[in-house]
Length: 510
Image (cartoon, rainbow, N blue to C red; front, side, top):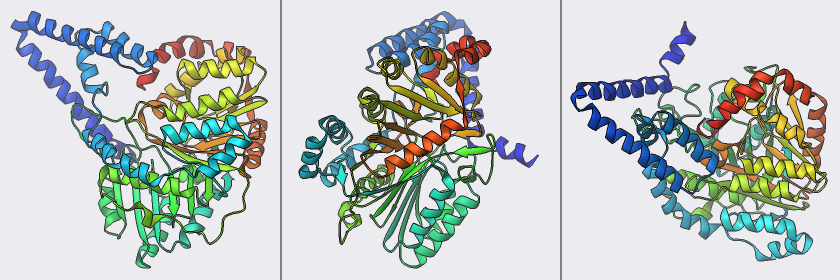
C-alpha cells in the first residue's frame, strides 16, 4: 500500500494528472462552443498544417520530423495542439539566457595548449582531427600527462570516490542525473557533511526528473540546510506546456580540481548492486581522471551551475595546481554536449570513431535507438571488415525501449555486426573502444535522448593506460553474454519485425 501511495503521490504522476485535467478542460470548452465547431475545427486543422510546415522547415533529423508529421496527419484536429504543447518548440527561456551568459566564460577559461595539439598532430593526424573537432565544437581542449583509471563496475568506482572525497581540502563538485536515498548516496552525503564542517566548499547538482521517483519534493532545501549548495536542475512545473526534455544526464565529480570522474554511474543503490531491480546484476562503467584534464570537468560543472544559479566571474580559483606533471601515456579530452546548440557532439564523436575503426570496434550501450546515420556507419564498418560488437542489456529496464533496441538487431547482424545481450542483467555502461588506440567513456547513450535532448559528457582518450582495462572488461563481458543470431531474431518475429518497426516510427519522441 505504501508503495502504491508513493507512486500515486509522486510529482510526475500529479503533474501528468494536472496536464490531463487541463486537456479535458480544453475539450469541454470546445464542446461548449459547439455551435462554432466548423470554425474551431478549421482553426485547429490550420494549426496542424502550420505545425507540419514548421517541422519540415526545421533543420533537425528527418526521422524526428517524420515521427511528428505522422501523428499530426493521423489526428489533424488535435495534432497541431499536441505539437504546440509537447513538441518542444520552445526551450526553457532561462536555459537559453544562461547559455548565452556562460558561453563566453567557458571560452575564456578553456584554452588549448597548442604545443600539446601539435604533438598529437605529429603522432596521429586522424586522432588530432577528432580532438580538433571537440575543441572547435564542444570548446574542450585535449591534454597530455593526465592519469586514467577505468572502473568496470559501480562498487569499486564508489569506494575510490569515497576515498578521494575524504581527502578533499578545498572544494567538491558533484553533478548526477539520479540521486536515490540509500546506502550509496547516504554514505557519500555523510562524507560531504563532514567536509563542509572542515571548511570545504561543496556543491551538488541533481536532475529533478531523473530523481523524481527516488527523492522527496524540494530535496535541495534539505541539502542546503546541511551547508551544501544545491540545485535541482530544470525543475518540473505542472503546466500544460510540460517540458521534460533538456535533462542534465551528466555524471561528474570534481575534487579540488585535481581528480575528476564521469561515466554511467549514478548515486543509487542499484549502481553498486545493493539492490537488483533488473536481473541479478547491474553493470556500469566509470572513468577517473587525474591531472590537468580535470580542468575541463571543473569548467563544465561551473557552466551548468551558472545556467541556473550563482554567476561565477572567476573560474580560475577552482583550477587545480600540480607540483609536477603526471607521467602518463597518451592524451585525454573530457568533452560536453548541450541541447541548446545545433551541434550533435555526442553522436558525432561516435560517428567519427566508427568511421576511423580499422580492426575492431566494441560498444556498450543500454539503448540502441538512434538515427539512420549511426546504423549506416556501423554496417559499413562491419562490411569493410571491422570486427564490430555491441553489448546491450539481457534484462530490460523499460520494455518498450527494449523492444525498440531488439528491432534493430536483424538489420545489423545481416551486415556483419555482432550483437550480444548481457545475460546477468542490465548493462548501463556507455563505452566505445577502437583498435586498442582510442576510446570514449561517458554518459552518452546510443539513443535520440542523449544525442538530441540531454546535457551529456564524456572522455575521449588516445593511447592511455585505461584502454587495456576497457579492452579486458569487454572481452570478459562477451564471455558472459548471449550472442544474438538471425535465428533468435526470427523466433522473436512479433517483437522484432512487427511491434518494433511500429514503435520505431515514434522512437525520437520516446
